[in-house]
Length: 72
Image (cartoon, rainbow, N blue to C red; front, top):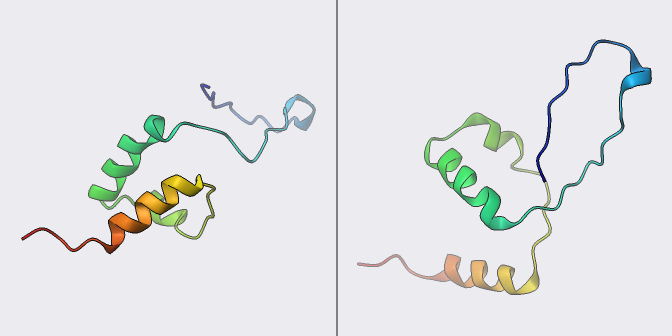
């Protein structure tokens, strides 16, 4: 799903309410998140306390990965 930015002109009658949640595939955003983290982008920190929903199996994989010791 492609999002479009709109210029706010002050006339609220023309504003279309948008859902606060969007469903995306992890693959569609993972490169941007990795790059933002690598470059310490401030906007990523702005969302650090936001909650996200992930599938139980993805959570298990991430949890196991975080417990792994770094390679020698």
